[in-house]
Length: 214
Image 1 (cartoon, helix red, strand yellow):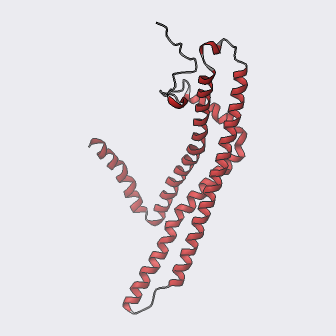
Image 2: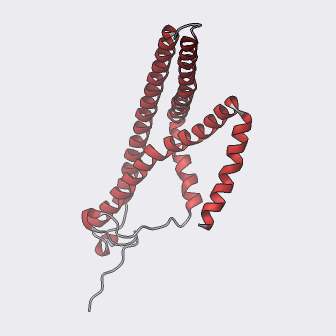
């Protein structure tokens, strides 16, 4: 019985040209290092993404803090109205809500800009990769295509480049946003109540440890 020769590029593909089995990189650290070096050409764009992603997250974190001022003003006004010593200061509440709206609009604009810039960078990197890979394929000896079809090779390249582009477009901004959110929320908690923040920090690992035994 004849057996199909395995492709040097990896495993087989399922419907739609996608790989049926995922493969691990042989040198993950080296691959990441090469990728960052490859992205070095777009330093200005990446710095722009970093600035706008951090800015968007900061404005989102500040929002609840400002909203709490409106809640406090409303509560104090209700207490004063019930006791007959004053009324609710709706003008102050209105000003706070307008400020809150402005902050969230700025956050949305920042988020849009960083997403737009990052999408452009990922598309440029994908285009550059496809171009260089195409030039590489043109230099491959014809003997290679005797055991590996052109369609299979192109399918593998297309899937890998598309996956890389999507990962760059999503992962980098999510990483920046997540780190900024954790730091920002921690600072906000400390500004509200250092004691409660300390209690929360102590309780979290203890809770995680207890859950692991359940």
